[in-house]
Image 1: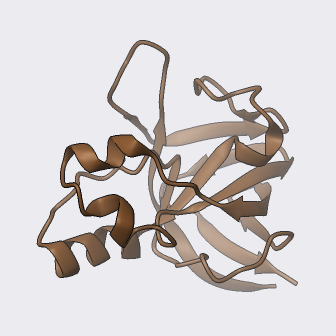
Image 2: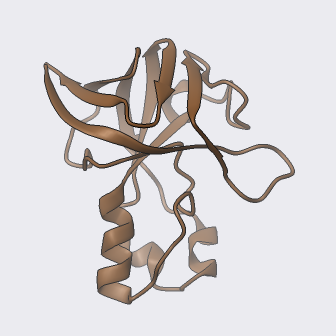
Length: 146
């Protein structure tokens, strides 16, 4: 187990609200993020973790500055976990997440710039399921578990 980064921002989405809601902390359990509209969805797709690198890539390659939360992430972190295979686990705060798959593309990403989906095809984020419930806060340390 070793430290790989920190939580930069946290977001939830709610039904009927088209804008992500920034939070200082979130509670997670095996059904996902409590109060998020995807809570209770299939476990493999309940939590989206995105690296700050995705935002930097769009700005550097396309000169597009996306607001944080635009990619639909729940956890925005300063570590890039996209190279990690499914099954790897991250301890974030008091919770443990298991990577399940790379994030798929969504057409809504092209609203800001039509080039974004193609650029971020493999760099939008990863889905994870909660294997140990807990609380995640901004600035929490991220541990890659062996």
